[in-house]
Image 1 (spheres, rainbow, N blue to C red):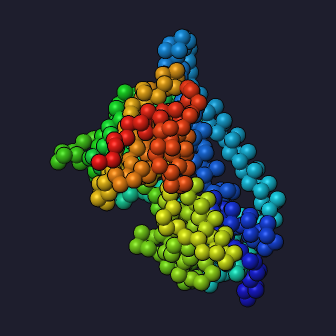
Image 2: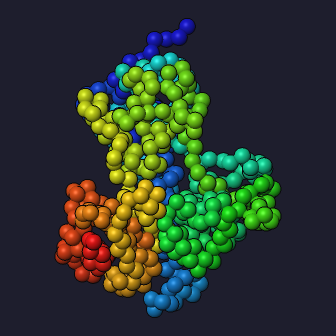
Image 3: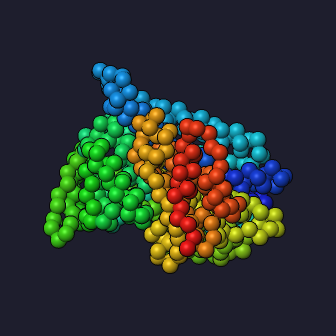
Amino acid sequence: MQTAPEEYDVVVLGSGEAGKYIAWTQAKKGMRAIVVERKYIGGSCPNIACLPSKNIIHSAKVASYFWRSEEFGITKDNTQIHLGFVRDRKRKMVDGLVQMHLDNFKASGAELLLGSGRFIGPKTIEVKLADGGARVLRGENVVISTGSRAAIEPILGLTEASPLTHIEALDLGQIPGHLLIIGGGYVGLELAQAMRRFGSHVTIIERNERLAHREDQDVTDMLHEVFSEEGIEIVTSAHIARVEGKSGEWVKLYAARDGAEIILEGTHLLIASGRAPNTQGIGLELAGVETTDRGYVKVNERLETTAPGVWAVGDCAGSPHFTHIAFDDHRIVRDNLAGGHRVTTGRQVPFCMFTDPEFARIGLSETEAKERGIAYRLAKIPMLAVLRTRTLSETRGFLKALIATESDHVLGFSALGVEAGEIIATVQVAMLAGLPYTILRDAIFTHPTMLEGLIPLFSAVPPRK
């Protein structure tokens, strides 16, 4: 006989960025809030994704300085990289982040329940507890925050090869002899460069014609140049037919390129060719929650699902796959639970790829502007024109801005260079405020800083016709 459900104001399935903040904010208002988490307290970002990867990437950046040390007047005799120590630094950071989350749960009053949850009816979740037993929870409001995972393509022999995903790659204790990476997007590029700097031979296999193929041609050209200079092999327009071997021992990829078969061999295989939502096997159909043809939870602009009182946030709801967007999803649901009307439409989606140099963008790219038939004025300068880069010996890349033709509003801004992720924030604030580009052009920025580069960039905007 099934026991009566425990009643809560808010039940959250998954403790990722949006879900945990919804629980914390509602609990602080005096509501009964509970979060069900299967494994990673705080979600993927602090445990296995954003922050751990940037920790590893920073270690790789330090390693790159050693390889370049003569440039700075320092010899590099007997340089060795111990990947186990790199991993331990990352693990120590993760432990601190997990403790921070536990403290936040305690301070907010939200309950954290470790176990696997699935819907067994409308707004009702059964949780199989990690330490045995089960609980049944019912929420006045239920939030689905189950995230996404690395997608494993249906390639013959790929699953049997036990490929690494970013999770395992970030926890390696030994440097791979030769790492084959399937996918030339953000994850693949960041990890390719890091592992190369640690001493691994690296080959990137990309099905499209270019790395980061959705970005402008000048961006991908520069990335291709940077990666090639670092000794990373790049194989584009390659379609993998089958895989032999096992990652960690020996792997062989058979691929087709320009009508001919190519064979690639390595010791390790990393799959980084996309994401899949974690929506299967959690009983959505029993809760009246529909999914899209790609498996994402179907939501409206308020992040409401097809079931009354059930919301979905973050990756699993098809939101852009960034932690900062998931955080904004939390604000949307938070305000709507309080009777407001906040929506996802029209919001800015800034992003940064933490390669070296970094690539960051806000607003339209040239490619997107042309696809939409939006006219623009283009300003572009090399990073060499930003004097701070010369003091750092980090002169690769460029700054680029798209300005409206009928007004002085900024339509888009791209930065490929050192500290790109920091630079875009200033332009983003100007765009949020609806300020003309001339405000940035005529500003007084501290010398010598990276932001000072905005002055020559926006001074290069062609006049209105």
